Image 1 (cartoon, rainbow, N blue to C red):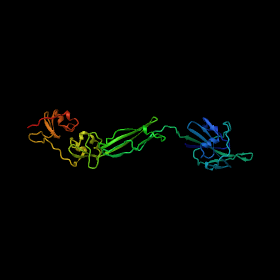
Image 2: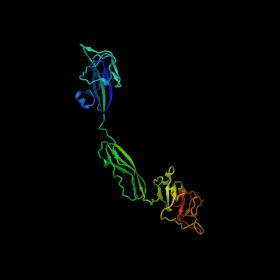
Image 3: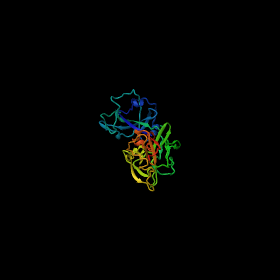
Image 4: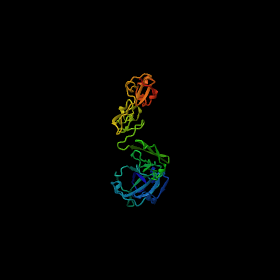
Length: 350
């Protein structure tokens, strides 16, 4: 396959000075009309070609028109040639010729007609057409086919390669070279990212796929810190409530333990409480605040070393006064750094 670029030259006599043009000066090969015609059969008047390099072919197209004086010539007016002569560069060259024609519709005016023994000499046009060969041997990047985001049911069977294939740049199957990076846990609802990667002949292609594992209607996955929750995702928290992740710009907070729904100090910044899940009962604190029992932990409390509190059914003793009063990461039993501030256990005052 070739792409075409074109320059056209018009000479004032019937002699074509092929060696005059730089495009032929460094030609590796110069062949005759039959091979040139096979190369570009759809080009009118093809009579010869010169090969300037591995991927570039120059084709000569010659047209002829007998002219009288003061005749305007455009390329569209010129019929096909029936004769062609290549002369040497030493032949007389008229001043200013040949002249490049950049617009094929441009008219060139002849003011004289050449006569030889009473026979009118035809004027010729010489079109120098450069054909750039498409490199069919070029190495092309492989292609991954069939990758698309999908949703699957909780606890279903999932094959990450089902319906997905890979091809080289010429359409040959290379699925055996396809790798999948990432995992999908079908037993935990959420969004999972898979990367499909294929390498061939030193080139690599990659596509990303989001697989969403969805719980059945009325069922919600347990909250797991670190899960990349999205706006609208619903989870079942440890207090038996269903919580929904808030939209942007706070969506990313839903994954952080500091915002664990229902149990952290700042959960309401990231989650909306939708109430108790079906069949759930409010948790019972075995040590409710009151006389003879440990006081319930208060995120706004001011605690000193040795204070004992009750939180979600367990007792905790404050070890580091400053941290015990910070809440967030230091909420006893649930904050990600609670053990730096509290010690599990402790006797309640009687």
